[in-house]
Image 1 (tube, rainbow, N blue to C red):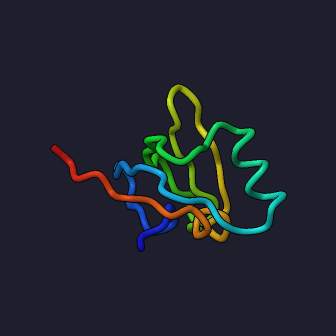
Image 2 (cartoon, one colour):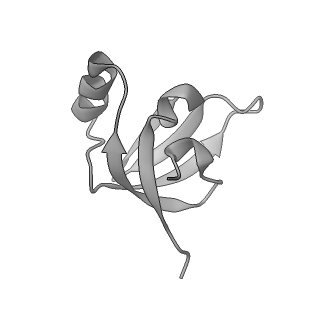
Length: 78
């Protein structure tokens, strides 16, 4: 199953599941990243970590290790 860490710049995906430490999952939920949400990978830092995603009108930066705990379904480009 692909994760948020597997996306390329410009790719969109739908969040399927969030796993990991309960405190991490709670923080992600509080930021508005819930199952069923649509996200887009906007940017990757020069050394590959962190990554920046667009969630609605917000942008979030996540470590790749955190993004690897978020399972997604990649949405094909039209």
